[in-house]
Amino acid sequence: MNVTIVGAGHVGLVTGACLAEIGNEVVCVDNDQKKIEMITRGHMPIYEPGLPELVARNMQTGRLRVTTSMEEGVRHALVIFVAVGTPPKPDGEADLSYIEAVAREVARYMDGYRVVSEKSTVPVQTGQWVDRTIRLNNRHAVEFDVVSNPEFLREGAAIYDFMYPDRIVVGAGSARAAEIMRELYEPIINRSFSGCECSLEKDGPAQFVVTDVKSAELIKHASNSFLAMKISFINAVAAVCELSGADVTMVAKGMGYDRRIGPEFLRAGAGYGGSCFPKDVAAFRKISNSLGYEFKLLDEVARINHSQRDLVVQKIKKALWIIRGKTIGVLGLSFKPDTDDMREAPSVDIIRALQADGARVRAYDPHATGEASHYLQDVEFCSDPYAVARDADTLLLMTEWDEFKRLDMPRVKSTMNYPILVDARNMLDPVEMRAIGFEYVAIGRP
Ligand SMILES: NC(=O)c1ccc[n+]([C@@H]2O[C@H](COP(=O)([O-])OP(=O)(O)OC[C@H]3O[C@@H](n4cnc5c(N)ncnc54)[C@H](O)[C@@H]3O)[C@@H](O)[C@H]2O)c1
Image 1: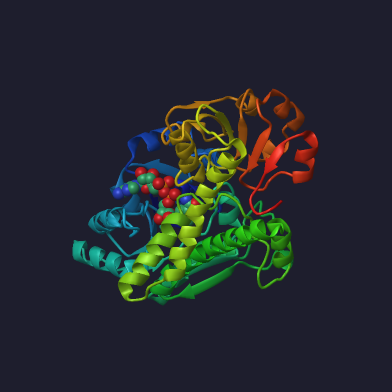
Image 2: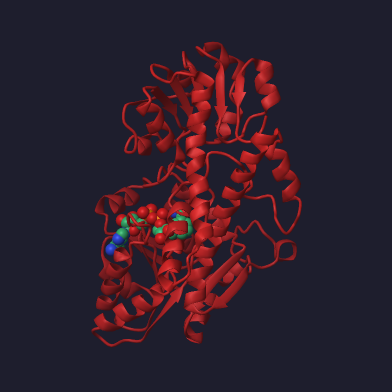
């Protein structure tokens, strides 16, 4: 099928490369000329495992092309995915101006029937506005359908998640559009593309959920808000654990074996970050409010999440007594491992708060220091984790990269000024760390 993706970012480029991989002719359009030049030269604008190889392979075969030309993209495709950003405004409302701009441009160049698919995360009823915008700018009066096809991939595991999803959600107002979307996703639904690591007998097909457009839009906001709620819930439980002397990792383990609850997203720590959960919780709350439902539960989810950042700072203060003049070494900066995404990373607020109290900060991240330098000032970025620890008064583990699980911790401790280790992700073994001689501090566990 001929497919175009507008927006070649985390979601758009992965979607484009994966759809090309399963045999479609894909054009990715982005209005950021530098990004398009980079991709053309074989350099990825983001760190995502497996993406450089996937993009290179499909560009070589000619099934994947990138361009800045909307006209080329719109003329090429039967299905046009809109995967541009929907960032938060200061009051939490989703900024849909990029979506509107793309809808107008799509309408301008459409020369025949098109399916325009919302891939970006958008508030409920956005589809109505996209439909109206295209209708008002539809010069050639061609037929079109607007569908909602939210994306559930996780940065760091984006290719796997796209190729092996639990479910594919399509909100469509017409059977024709729903059928086209089903045909496009058929190899992924039936796990029948070449190189597929799943078998239908073992894993079953991906669920293909067809709904109306509004319900599909809501599925995405409700899913992300629910996952964020799980994280805030376990962080609240962690607070009770600290007050009572229980261990939140044990509590989470015991809860997670219940299939109705499940073990995922029950890790207490510094809280969620990234480009999705914080903004989607805020946008869901905002749209609910404007429709007339005050979603106070979501206020509390966000409040607990933010308080985790303060908690980490308080723990460092408690361990160090005086922050001024001390050196804090930070291991990990990105909001989670396997990505260089620094958007809403808890490390940023925590480092700024420590600096405001007079700390010197050194940091190491396997992939995110380049990005982090746009968010942080006066941080000494080191090229390896041992350099971060040298003469540090506290070591703060902020991101659970695999690399940190393999560190020679006795060596780390031997070069530190004070052996204080604050594990903001509960990644390390407290017994082991204390046996090495660390003063080990974690979240919600003794
Ligand atoms: N990042 C994730 O993990 C993730 C997961 C699921 C859903 N989403 C949602 O997907 C959407 C995109 O997120 P992202 O992380 O890929 O964003 P991103 O910032 O990485 O990419 C967006 C791209 O759109 C381009 N763009 C903006 N306006 C354009 C226009 N008029 N024409 C062409 N290109 C344009 C930008 O230059 C940028 O490259 C958001 O709504 C997000 O909430 C993101």
